[in-house]
Image (cartoon, rainbow over all chains, first blue to last red):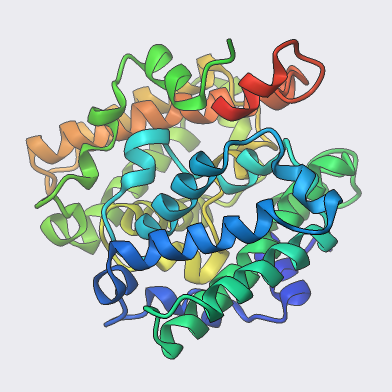
Amino acid sequence: MMQSLQQKASEWSGVQIADAFAIDKDQTNLFQKLGLQAFINLSTNFYNRVYDDEEEWFRSIFANSEKEKAIQNQYEFFIQRMGGPPLYSQRRGHPALIARHRPFRVTHEAAERWIHHMQQALDTTSDIDDDSKIKMMNFFRHTAYFVVAGVELKDKNQHPCKDAPGKDHACKNF
Amino acid sequence: MMQSLQQKASEWSGVQIADAFAIDKDQTNLFQKLGLQAFINLSTNFYNRVYDDEEEWFRSIFANSEKEKAIQNQYEFFIQRMGGPPLYSQRRGHPALIARHRPFRVTHEAAERWIHHMQQALDTTSDIDDDSKIKMMNFFRHTAYFVVAGVELKDKNQHPCKDAPGKDHACKNF
């Protein structure tokens, strides 16, 4: 049976879906708690690491994007997703997380490297408290593998609704 | 130059992005304003029309999905997107609007038919006020064509970052 995207994301990331979306729990509004500047600092910290990565294969994924644009896209998405104003959608439309990552080689290794830099960036962004860091990291880790799972569906040309035996069942679970 | 997804969506739908995302404006929280039952009523109304559509080509798009599941997926997404609790993500993960529509033939004609039924459903859901209906319909119309634009990228195998001349520029705008 075809696994759903978020089942795959949980299995690969080791983060259960309830923990991944603890950023949405009642009383949690990370944008109100942390403020705009913390998100700008985090994304700047993150992309400084990415664009300086000693691993050329990872750095090259971002070679066609301007760093300043990458930073803005990221913090606007995080702010919108974590309780703040919909800055991202007002400028670029729906996040469409999987579709917008289709141009890139989003492998398991790339997800791990992304997570590595984000963990470092979180650890060195002083205006984010420890409880928020844990919630955010669970969201990031799960989301990274959610994107891997979504992009893999294309790469393998293995869409559940095409050719597969038991396709009706698979389609319902996608 | 490659148009961005939301530029295409605006052109095809006739809805500017600021109007499409007026559901997010300050002071607008459609979930708080309308309540859970209005969203359930709307999606039930909508899918009753879809599953009874006299147009077999459109009805058949949904033939592999159970109506009750389709209704729940839709109202949970709408509630989450319009200011309510993240029911959809807690159950299914990120909306991933384009990726989750990839199995279906999301043509311009299908978008128009979807919009037609949604307009009828909105018009006959009495617990939604006129101002909210306008905001919601702009969001729905723009989003329908956003999905068409995203799915077309795959269908034509025309991803901006593959093969195209001027690909660097295109990738930045995707």
